[in-house]
Image 1: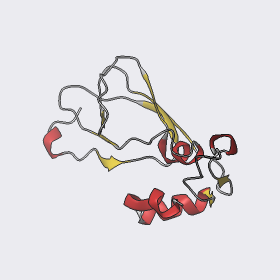
Image 2: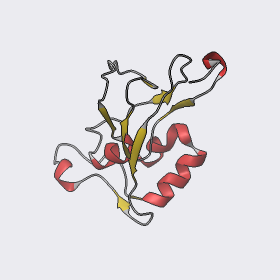
Image 3: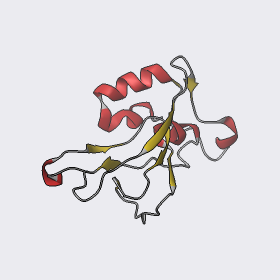
Image 4: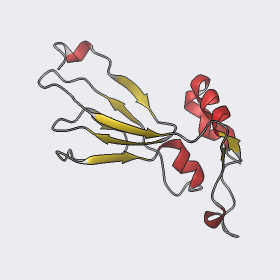
Length: 130
């Protein structure tokens, strides 16, 4: 619980590099942009992140979101992030790249992608787009 939620920052709008799963209990602290989701108590939220957008060749879209503060109840969440090893090669899956749908993203080393995102947050996917 935040005594002055209007002055608390939470987390700015962002996308996550990797897949994450979140259990947020009985209060909604996650706000999505361009996606209307009704809070369902006890639901498990799965956010695919940049990684799955690349691997799916754009079929699965990442979601811009932020964490917001709340002044009425404590926000307790449990989350799990899946991160591939730093030296893994990330590219669209061959089965999802068809003769009429060319790869949308070039091959990238996961560590390079995450490091580039740290300094070029807003255009990291565009930087590897073919």
